[in-house]
Amino acid sequence: MTLSLPVAPALPARPREAAGRWVALTLLLAAIAGLAGCGFLGVAPNRILSAAPVYLRQLAPGWPAWTIAGGLLLAALALLPPALPRHALALTGWTIALFAAVAGAGAAASVTIAALATPAARVSLGAAFWLTVLCAGLAISENLRRLRLPLVARVGFFVVIIAGLAALAARGWFHDLSLVREWENRRDAYAQAFSEHITLVAAALVVSIAVGAPLGIFASRRPRVSSRLFDTLNVFQTIPSIALFGLLIGPLTALAVALPLLRAAGIGGIGFAPALIALVLYALLPVARSTDAAVRSVPASLLETATAMGMTPFEVLRHVTLPLAAPILLAGLRIVVVQLIALTVLAALIGAGGFGSFVFIGLGQTATDLMLLGALSAIGLALVADALLRVASAAALARVAS
Image 1 (cartoon, helix red, strand yellow):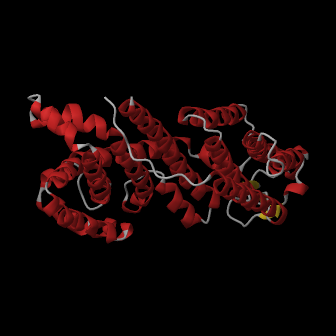
Image 2: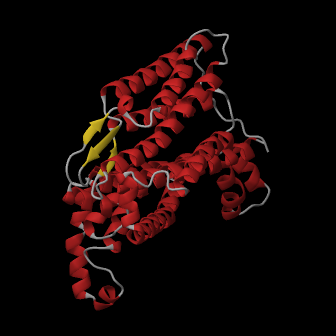
Image 3: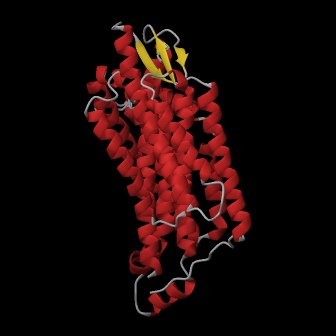
């Protein structure tokens, strides 16, 4: 079965290429400015006191500075003559800069800690490091896209980089970084937080799909009530997340007091239950809207043909509507999952655990690296989920178009 999907008009080649060069130049200048004016690492006598900046040019050993400079030079050369393999050259340069920045930070931390010979001393990652990694990640992603590589190949490229850095981590390359020390000191707590975060996101996703998908299908078949339905669900989006978590404490506490069975089941004003309810309320609107849009995208002629062949409404939904609507459904699901992973960080405020517990403990102790441990873990989890769902969405689109 062939399905023709609308394609947005593309920009002319020259304006698009010019815009790409400006983006590449901006990322290059931002990385250079950060490396020149901000500290690449920070050295502090302990985990609480503020760190003194150490610039890239001051690092020992010196190879990270030269390697990063070489990578950025390749990225700069990619902006010059059009005869060069522009995107491949830029991809190579930014990959070298990214790998050198991460590996170099670990090597420099080990040298610094050995020189200080103070057990409480900490080496943290500075603004220049984060800016370089951010610019490199954006530039690599953009150049992979402009090379017209398949999505699986793009994801695989990042997997190779991560695998290389993981191999260094397994050999203790990053052991002396403060961020890694925070993780090593809390391995058991981190494993528990990871489990709590995944469990809460998965439970909220299952419940929101079970409730929101039927609402979206109903809205697609009842256009007159769809606007009122979506307006009602949109009310929950207007409530600040922290406020919604707090508003659920009172009613659920009263229910737990009035109904001992709920209290025995672990349902109360704090913990898993209010966090789950709040996350589901936030996820209902995007789930319902994406389902409505996906169902409406299926051509009416195909539905009429399926009905004429004797299919029941349920069979039409299962064998025609859902398979053809899968790309849009997965695209909407990707947004919902990323949103849930981010909001679950705040659920730690009401005792639901997860990576947010590290963020708020770090805030209370003014321990920046502990906050980063929780925040970066949530970001990494969101990026992994986004990549997997992008691949699934691309596979579903290829299947529909074939």
